[in-house]
Image (cartoon, rainbow, N blue to C red; front, side, top):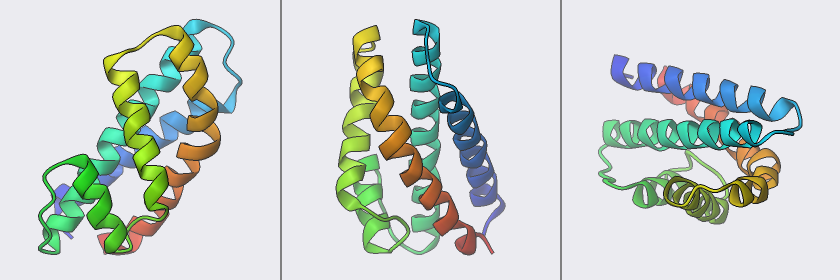
Length: 130
């Protein structure tokens, strides 16, 4: 694969590691929740952009995140098509309407639902980088 895809994947892995670290300790303060939300948003952005590059390298055009995730699911780059809809919705809510109550509500979904999906995606993408 191209150096651009490898660099994007490395950045995705770094964001994923930051998200893993941010949820490793239960959040207490509002800033803890804010940090988790920001790590989630970074991971989401780098994930879909990496998937987009991999799809493009395979001749599949997908200009927007929702289309990227649908095409990546069809190409078996990701699992759980339905959970990606939840991830997109959570990201849109967190980006456009950040508040402390929302951050506290999203935390369990990020930790127990979305993080494992990002981890599986990173694992599934590795063979495509060779």
